[in-house]
Length: 593
Image (cartoon, rainbow, N blue to C red; front, side):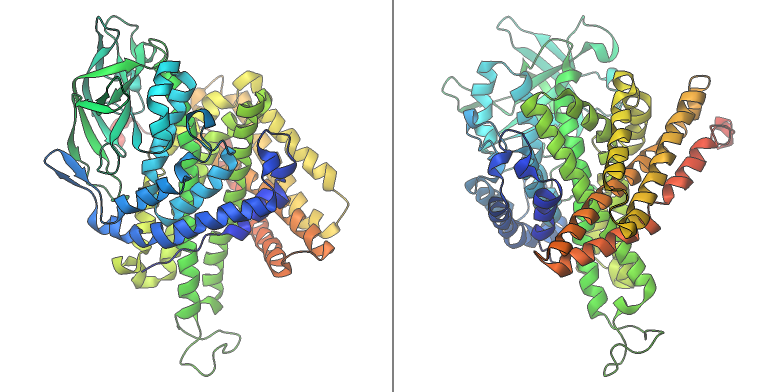
C-alpha cells in the first residue's frame, strides 16, 4: 500500500521564510508565527497520514453505492469525516460569526494540500462544502446565512455546486433547468444536472445544493441564469432538516478515478429553491465558488504529484535493478538500486522541482486572495484573477504528467493496481477537466484576463519579476547566472508572446486563440521560475547565516537549479509555437479530420 508523509518542513519554509506571512500587513497574519504554523500543520499531518491516507485505496476499490435512493460512501469514510469535524478542520478559515475559526485562507490552503494528497476523493466533500459556504456568505441574505452557514461550517450539512447538464457544460447559456416563482417567494426548480461531486452521501444530515437555473421570461442565454439554494431536506422554522425536497439521485457516475467521491446525476422535480443573490445574476454568484474551486483544483494537481513522487522515491531507493555505469554502488548485492541511474534521477528531479515550485506558487496565490478579501486590495485581486487560469490549467496539466512520471519509475509494477500508482494518475486526470477544462482556462487567460483593466495586471506581473531581478542583481554572481538570467530570459519570452497577440490577434483572433494553451504553459513556467528564484535566494541566505537545516537548504538550491536549466527553457518552445500563428492549426477543413 502506498504511503504519505506531509511535507510540513517545506510548507513552513515557504510560508514563514519565503513569503514571510507573519510580517505581512494582512489581518490575521500577525498570529501566524513559525511555532503556530508548525503546530497546526503538524496536527493536520496526523490527520492526513493516519486517518485519510489509509482510506485512499479503500475509497478507490469500493467506490460509492446507490441503494434505495441513498448513497453509501466507502468503509471508514463516515468515521474519518466525524474526526475531521471534531478536529475543527472544516472551519479553519470560516467566519467566526457562523462558528468558524477565522484563520487566513493561506493556512487552510496548506492544510488542504495535505488532506488532498492523502485522499483527494475524500477531501472533495468538505472542499465542495467550503465553496458553497463562500457563495452563500458572499451573496446570501442575512436570513440565508444564519440558516445555512453554521451547519455548513461544521460540515454537519455539506454543499455542492450544480452547473452542468447533459447537453451543456461550458456553454451554460444553453441550460434548460428552470425555476418557477411561487407566491411565497420560493421557486420550483425542475431539471437535471450531471457530474455533481459529493451530490449525495451518508455523512451529513443535509446537502445544500447550489443550482443554476433560468427563471421563465428572463433574458436569453447566460444573462438569464440565476442561482438557487435547493436543500436536500427543507429546513424547518427551528433550523432543522424537515421534509424531503424534490431532489433525488438518478445514478452515480462510473468514473476513471476519484471513486471515493459520489459524482451524481441529480434530478430536480419541482424542488423548492430559494434565490441566492439577484435574479439573472447567477453566474456572478457562482463564480465566487468557481474561482475558489479553480485554485483548489490547481492544488489537487500538484498534491497528487507530491504523493506519487514520495512513493516513487521510496521505490527507486529500494528496487534493485542493473549496475551504475560509473561503478557499483551496492557491491554486496546482486544489483544497484534504481535511483543510481541518470534517467531515473531525471524523472525524479522533474517531479521534485515541479512540486516544490507549484506549492510555493499556490501559497503565494492564496496570500493574494487573503490580501484581496481582507484589505480590499484591488491590485491583489486583479493579479490573482489573472493567475487563476494559470494555477488551474498549468498545475493540473503538469501534476498529471508528474503522476504518470512517478508511475513510470515502477516499470510494470506501476501498471498494477495493488501498488497504488495507477490511482494517483487516474485521480489526477480529472483535475485537468473539471471546474473548467484546461483549454477553456487558456482561452479565459488570453481572451479575457490579459486585457483585464487595460492589461495593468499582466504589466504588474512583469514589473514584479523585473523588480525582483533588479533588487538581487549583482549581490551573488552564482545566483545571477543560475537564477536571475534564466528568469529574465523566460520573462522576455512571455512578454514577446503577449506582444504577438497584440499585433496579430486583432486582425485574426485565431492567431491568439490557437496559441492560448502554449501561453498558459509559458506563463506557468515563468511563475514557477519566479518561485524558484525566491526560494533559492532565501535558502542561500539561510545557509549564509548558519541557521536551520543546512541539508534542506542545499537541496532546495540544487533542485531549483535543475528547474531553471531543464524546465524553464521550455518558454522558448512555447513562444515559437505561439508565433507560428493559426495557419497550420486551422489548415484542414472539418471534413478532413
